[in-house]
Image 1 (cartoon, rainbow, N blue to C red):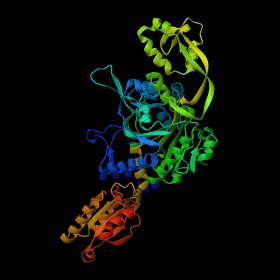
Image 2 (image 1 turned 90 degrees about the horizontal axis):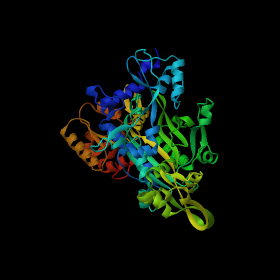
Image 3 (image 1 turned 60 degrees about the vertical axis):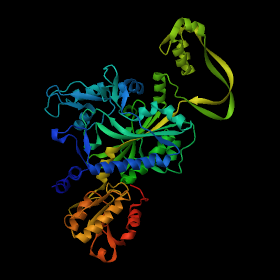
Length: 577
């Protein structure tokens, strides 16, 4: 008999506890549920709020000189996601059983059946593997179709017109990119500038699996950090030190063991291509540790070129070891370069560049675009103003490419104009600065996945009892108050204490039913760090006991000092939640 047979599966126990005590369960259960959707119960909501607030503390409040938080809609017009590349690139490979009609994500089906990791492989390569290995439908054994791509965007319409197509956003990023100039101006036009957002996103996954790990709708927590790649270094005095990395080069050689590197050295040697990417990886390391994850149970895995998103020059996934599935991604860290801002400039015609001052003015020879408005006016008519606006936002190099033809008429950004009406000239100028398109480093997290990670790391069994050792800072309920017995004089004092602690804005549980041992066990099972008990000694000397969830030790304090002591134990300030 295996250890698993004796102890049961840890993950199954966590799921059972989550349903029974109100952390999470499958949505729409009474109708059989829908894969990829989960409800958060009362305790789950409180835990998620605390995780989100801790994320905000690390990524916004500790960086409020660098980062501002905004909120944008969850529905995006089609043009926004066309500009971002999601219409064309936000896809997964899908394969269908020709017998029973069941659909699968092709790369997952291959990995689960023959153990070959094929994430990022093209459709033709996946088809070749399916045919060579003669893979069949896992459900009925039927023949499988050819692999094709499936777009993961949830499509909708905006208003009553079917032509006004919109999509539920798959990431919060595009709202931040499109609002960049607004935020930049409101934040006194300074770089670097981080824009943070916490909100709902939707991804129409082909075959969601791993419970709360892969959802079709979830809360994302992202920072788009806009910076000059040649600008000042990050504040390494705040976050730096060691990172456990598994670089793409090692993965390609079949290595699975991460190496430990100093982040500043890794940036200097080019192992991490962008210094701000490395900085936010350090912030994420410490944030995840506060959720109860040991340093040895996390590392960063670099994505192979074919695994990266279309916008990324380098991506690291932060992985955490969990009980059921081994290494699971908890955050993604992408160096998006200037891809997004450049694309939105091209499609919208809006200037997303910012002014970068020089330390000293420079005398330089610059190339400029000059036009003959009279000739253009005759050629373009009422479209002249639109063309000139587009031309103002174009790089000279783009115009030079259009001019690199001997044809009489050329096309510039969709406008057909006489070649002779557009010229490139060189001029000498004294410049105080230049305009650049900022580059972006992005840390991105899913909140619900982190709720599951917290429960997985916190779950323990002691003498056939479950104890959730959730870090006290993020515990859903901070304290429990118990009268030793259901005696009127004990209940009265206990309820007074309960009300007093609630006035501190603490989350508190009051329970008077059952034996004190059972109540301690119920409190331990949902991760309450401290239990306050009113007993008969309380009636004579105004003292109560405080029991520690993890050590089971009890201390006695006076009721008048209880507030101060609990806040001290919880490491909270007055008024904290």
